[in-house]
Amino acid sequence: MKEILKKFIPPFLLNLYYFILAFLGALIYSFPSRKIKVIGVTGTNGKSTVVEMVSKILGEAGYKVASISSIKFKIGDKEWLNTLKMTMPGRFKIQKFLRQAAEANCQYLVLEVTSEGIKQHRHQFIDFAVAVFTNLTPEHIEAHGGFERYREAKGKLFKATKDIHIINLDDENAEYFLRFPAHKKIGFTLNEMRGEPFSAIKAKNIQVLKSGLKFFVDDTEFNLKLLGEFNIYNALAAICVGLSQGISLETCKKALEKIEVIPGRMEEAITKPFKVFVDYAFTPNALEKAYQTIKNNFKPKKLICVLGAAGGGRDKWKRPILGKLTREYCDEVIVTNEDPYNEDPMEIINQVADGAGGKAKKFLDRRKAISEALKIAKEGDVIIITGKGCEPWICVTGGKKIPWDDRQVVKDEFRKIYEKV
Image (cartoon, rainbow, N blue to C red):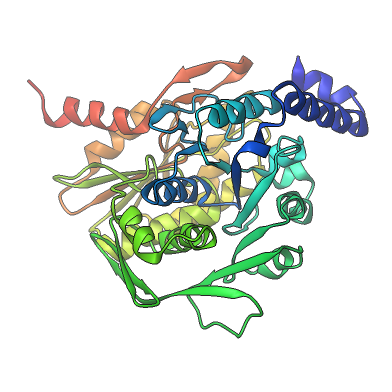
């Protein structure tokens, strides 16, 4: 019903409706962001990881922290899964959560901010103390009507945040985000600094290892248990937040080195006789980085890839591109169902498989696809299953949600095949 109404309501009225809802939500819960420091994290990839890292750093520094990400909700020591299938909750839910966090005496809320959330004014009437930009690549292009509008939506967080801006200087869109005025700007980079007129940090002496990542910021050595060079960028973003709040590099180091895994982000589900990783990557940029990480770190005999693409009219342009990436990196390709919503799932699968150039096996049943990957894998191979990470649902027609967890399905199917009683 909601989607039908959207088609008939003029955009300016819909925009006004969202704005009024945001105001009412803040009014009903007494503008709770005035009582807590809110840190907003936006970008295409890495948002949930940065939210997790920032929360750990603030907690290590002795602060009580709340957070919202696509992975979970957190207020102090209490955590629960985000089962909404919505990264940034609606206006009333966010304001209610802010109120609960403030009443629990949290000093900080770390919030994952999406372009769709901004488009629908979910960020309005939240006083952001810090805005963080991770990176930007094409995503939600059809929903926003082009990359420029997608970028503009992200920019609105920086326009609304007057105090501190933290920006990835290595992203080609950095200059756009640097234009917005702020009392303080902090950049981060893996490259040579160019004498920026603001403070910046650089990761030096980088080592990408099978066991994780090693790098220096100034004279402080960081040893992360996380995989993938992209996680150095995520760590730098979180370190910048810590520094902006007067937290030492040593405290940042202690916090980040305690992180064993980010749920559903390059998470190892099976270790032997071959490795199986589950990763959230669903954009071409993120998928390529995931494949590169596996290839470079583990040098697998075979890389076996299980992937799909979300439906509901979402970014159809990227489906053949996702498939094309498998031609470059994967030895075995299995295309399966992901989140078809109201689209024909087999049509989505075919569009991804077409990009793979006839190389792909196709399975409508995601469990069977995962089982097939496990059956063909040998010692020394690596399987990577992408698109869902730790998401708890598969979303199908009519708004129906099927309970799901790639990580658990992998373990269940592995036991059936290799631990038969």
